[in-house]
Image (cartoon, rainbow, N blue to C red; front, side, top):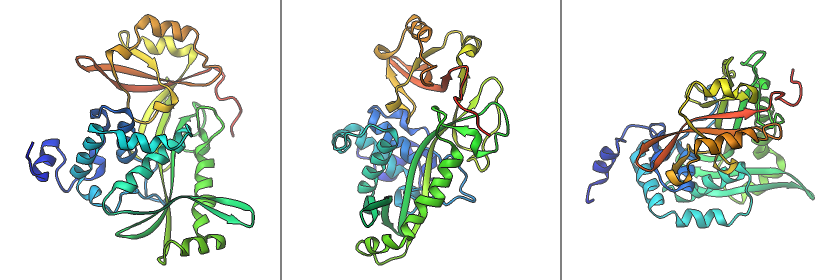
Length: 331
């Protein structure tokens, strides 16, 4: 109490000159689950390296990027009083994880001191047909930016070339990394340059608009035959493993005293932090596992360790999939 901002940054361990990526472990320090997801959206690394892809962090030109202690202070205040964030999220009834991720970012961009959010989910229409939407249109110190957001969870095939983007599939085996990148780069990003977009954008800004995307999420490698990573993968990407149901017993023997439990889809973003009363007993998990409908859909499991009295933190996450996964052949 009573410390200067610089002293508080030092206490938090985030001195000036560091970047947002230095806050990678910060979400687990926060108590409110929505605020943890908010923090995770901001500080988690992208799936791809920035080299050849038009990626840009939404806060790239902000003081929070230059001085992450200021961001940490803001997140702590959100955690102390999550009511404004919860009220913002309650304004939308959509429960899809990707849209939840977008709503978190919209909240951030309305709060950050040196960004002006010009529009969100801006429709571009031609006649009576909607050509698409611009996820975000924002102004910062570097100009006006059209930004597309996505959060994805991809499992690498256990056969073939892991460098190939088409060998990384969503849990339902319908979505693929190559398809997502093609949609982003060939359809979503060029939309801001479409003739029909010009009139809409001129009402919001007279500056040129630069398009980029930000792709967050996790990559899951097969077990036990761990493969490589996709081409242009960010070396700091978040990762886990996926396991066929018939292999679970062998895998489980690696952690004989581990505490596992399933994680609901709406909680897939930030690492889980739960209290002892929410922790499944081992026999409860075993009973669930015996009936686990992995054949219906892959299930995300987390391994939890106790970090202090009454609190358990996620240490690892794995997808449990049916033995016949994926459902269709990919070439």
